Length: 349
Length: 77
Image 1 (cartoon, each protein chain N blue to C red):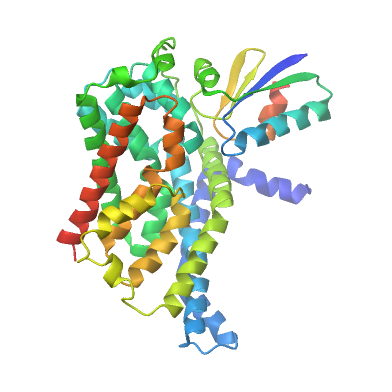
Image 2 (image 1 turned 60 degrees about the vertical axis):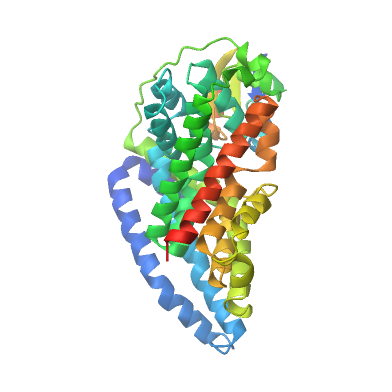
């Protein structure tokens, strides 16, 4: 790498706080410029702005950088927040907690602790080994993938902060209540035997002594990793969304997924189960569905189901949970999601 | 000869990337290593790894979670 490039890379490390300041300003400036920029771009292209194609293209050109920018912003901030909450620290915070409070803590920590779905099972086992009660561990396990920064960033980008906040609140509620209910059912015996026979581990609380520069590194690494992994899905999702925007007549879906179709919510949850997608893939499609008349509750239930109740995850969980516990887990979470879906449809709008 | 174990179920590709990175660095530095991939959940859990990929060098857990930076791998070898 050239001398200049190497120096440029080291700049955030040497001057962390100015870097943050400049980054925020640059981000805001870019964000404001997006609307006018996309209109200008469409103006240059040989397209009729109000045609189906023109409409779809403008949507795509505006939404794509907007979503990517918001995603990068949120992921960076969350990456920095995550550096304060390692799984080890979360585990020691939750070990031996009482139910109720423990469930609330676990769900909240699930939002800010870094979580990769591949690590779900090792993490689960690590928690159990250290004496975190089963219900509390499950509250964490439900909240972490469902209420993640990508989902929140995208919801914020596409639907505004109220919807994002509502999703977070409801997701946390489902996690807390489901975890608490399962905890009360006292199903520890339904953990696979080899899990219960593992050596107990004393949870240690390692001091977090990271500098600002380290945390910025963590944020940047997070952006590289997550946005780098997820951008094709976003592009694909927005392209589908753009096509639906431009070409499908409004209210087309109101019959099938609208508020009056009471069976739409359970159906949405069921359809979501065999599908696994990260939030990035599913939300742009969700947006398009909404724009064409699907009810918000139905669509949110679908989204939660896709993320939180995925067949692949259940297959993996089967290795540590006996069938009855797994079925209970799925049942309780599905019930929670159903309630959320119905509540949204009935009480909002 | 250094004993290096990469622990991960292989579902997100980070474990593969980590293993390849370690092999690359070892080759570049001329360090002999014996690389073992641990993919069974039972073994990963028994090692106390909570975030995959995990890396154990000569019996000591040095890393867990995400692909390690090149400089970090170089420091191990």
